[in-house]
Length: 161
Image 1: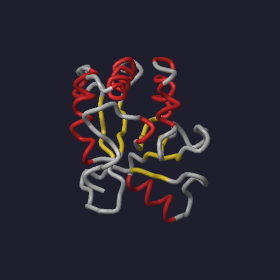
Image 2: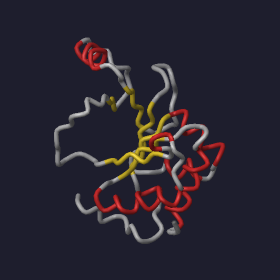
Image 3: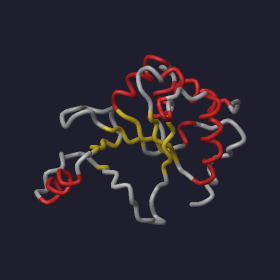
Image 4: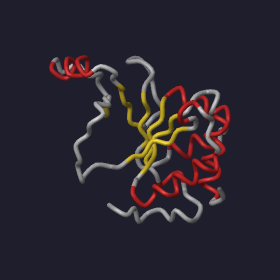
């Protein structure tokens, strides 16, 4: 639904209200930098965890996702009905998406766009600008940029950028 009526972008944002996509390794990094933040992300309406490998276990009640860099591999597994049992989401970025008004809209937030560390307040400001149009975020971070991600999440949830 647009605009998103469940979140006031001007005030504190309850992280638990948003949909999240986050890598399994990124959850570990964030757990070390902000242990109070991970349970809040996992409590969202639907948190998708990008698995590190086909044998990776993810937190209970989270949606496992496999990410494909090769369209041919994804298509092969679909043809063979060989997507790992229990995986409810797969992703491949063909760089040309078709619009679908029924989807949950997720925006990507990066802690280091262009390999330059972003200011956590600027990331929170960007998130607030997008909140009326999205239902959640995908966090793009590395182990080295996890402190910036934790600071962004704290700024977003406290209402102060």
